[in-house]
Length: 368
Image (cartoon, rainbow, N blue to C red; front, side, top):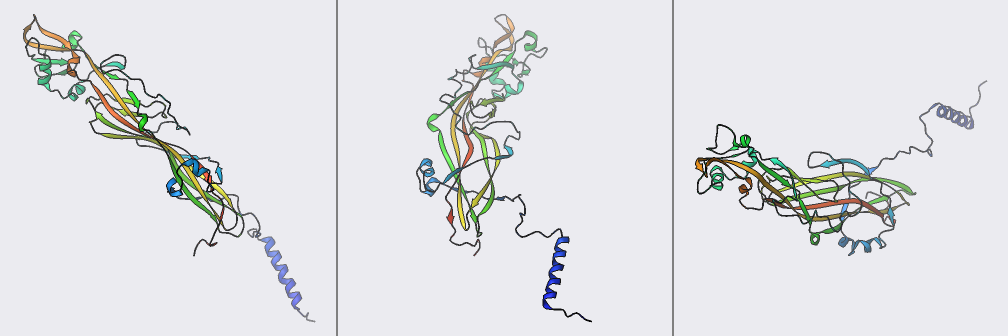
């Protein structure tokens, strides 16, 4: 006898089959289950703005306005360190101003004095050449009683006509030294500039329920220094100019820089900042990023001194001798031997983040 299949019986069979299928299929996930706690951060491009564009005359006025609702926590992640010098060094850029009232190394003294000069170093032949005096000029400097020498010996450097049977410097201990000075750095307080850079970006929730929006952006902080040479003596010394109280960044300076040259030294760290915004349905919020920057200008002076003696040989006896030693300082020809220049320091500090009020979206759809 055939059983009559009713519509009700057919529905029960179909429902039972579906239940068995679902219980055996591990990949089926209930609609309301939590997908994942790991959210994907979307990178945003910061839009630069100004106080004037925002309608304010000071940063304090802006922060007290209705455009700013709350201050947000900043927990940056250091990504990488960039250096124009090609080397990576540890340094620290604080979150606040670094300059005190007196950052100079003192008024210093004129070139050639001992209180601002480093240890003696034997002058090299290359350094003698860098004076650009020429052989004849050096001989003229060491005329004695109207007698022009055959030659002059300056350590290993020998002019044309210098005594050749032995080196006068080595034979008699007549050595020439060059001494690099301790740099004197003076801050020009009247040319110091404090500034704020302001950036912003928007976060939006286009859903019909409250939701989180995950964003990330990058910014750089650190110190960059530009050095301009106003005057140089042309002798390579490889002396560094240290700017006190500014990170631990030194500007490598040598006396071989030409007048008017400009070099840059930069130590910057790129940071990533992540931000999670909880937004009501169909709303958006503007996030403001404020970074303080300080631009300072310094003058520096790198003194140098040539001392010791040079060996001079004459074609005939002068005052009873063919060989004489004279002060090596005469090579300076009475000039103030120093490099003068200017340092411009730009410091970028940690950022501060502020959130604006939540505003209803006029168009709830992200695309028209």
